Image 1 (cartoon, rainbow, N blue to C red):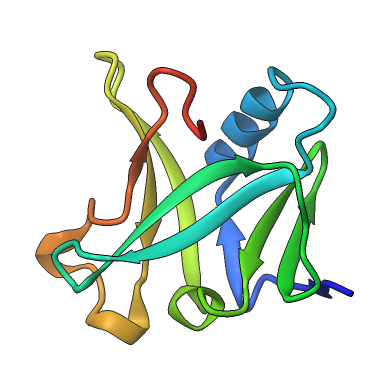
Image 2: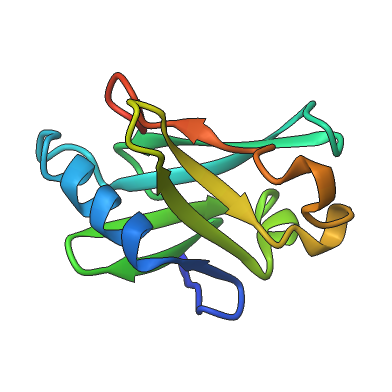
Length: 125
């Protein structure tokens, strides 16, 4: 059984919630949520990304919003505790999800855009 995440573990800003709901409305009914994951690399040694998922596993944590769910596996969750996901649209076709407040890996500093995934071309694809 998947665990329910709370906003102490992971939050989405209002713009991120609106964009996620918009993207989620464009996919078919087999999509269960937006999976947030961590991979080796990036300026802090870890890079974050997002993709649509058609499965929620027993070891996943789920944060439910109106119209969509954010899914995080238990291996990624320790890296995301306290993180805020924001959506930044600079108005020139450059729109991005940004992971802010990365406390476990040194924090934003000069790496404010690390771990972001572009929303162009479908965003969470």
